Image (cartoon, rainbow, N blue to C red):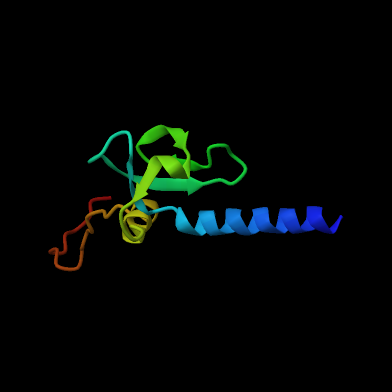
Length: 101
């Protein structure tokens, strides 16, 4: 029983390490398509393969990817927290007019 528990703990540790290595926002390149840069959208350990890319509908295995740089967290934050700006209307400097009732 201890061997099974140890094996599960080892598997969990490996999955956690892989999830930290392939976290969302990292820029990657597919080994099949060198020069085409994509961004990791999600790492889901319950899926096989576990890595989803922003511009690719097919999930990928870690062996298929080359890590390029640090996460693009600003890109994700700006996409998620986008607030449109509307023009403001200022009525303070308008001349007063009589209203016909």
